[in-house]
Image (tube, rainbow, N blue to C red; front, side, top):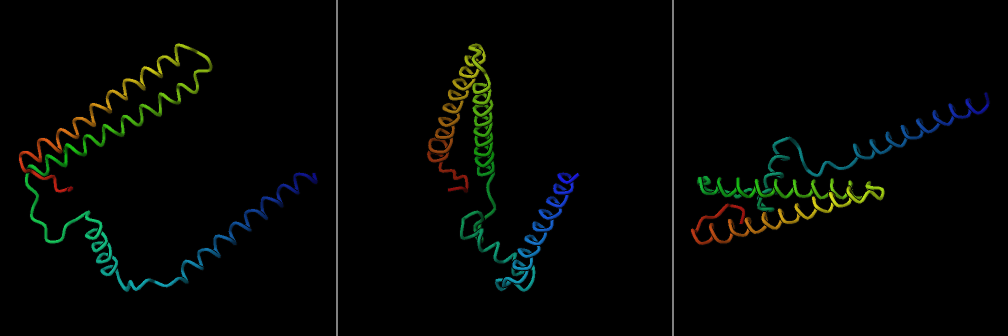
Length: 145
C-alpha cells in the first residue's frame, strides 16, 4: 500500500513540477519583447526581406520561362531520387544490422546498397549533365543560380 501511494504522490509531484516549469517558460516567452512587429503586415514584410536576402525569391524578377520551369522540375525530380537513395541505404543498413548472422540477409543488404550506390552515381552524373552541359551550352538558366 505504501509503495503504490508513494508512486501516486511521485507522479503528481512530477506532473505538477513539469506544469509549473512549462508555465514559467510560457510567461518568459510572453514577456519577451515583440521585436518591433506591430501587426501581421510587418511580419510578412520581414519574411519577404529575409527571402530576398537568402535568394529564395528575387525582387522584381521577370516571369520564369518554360525552360526554367522544366529545369526546376528536373532538379526537383533528381532531388527526389536522392531521397529515395537515402531511404534505400537506411533500410538496407537496418536489414544488415538485424541479420543476426544470417549470411543470406547480409548479402541481400549489401546487394541493395551496391545497387543504390550505382543509382546515385547515375543521378549525380545526370544532374551534372543537365545543369552544366545542356543549360549552360543552350544559355538557359534554371533561376536557381
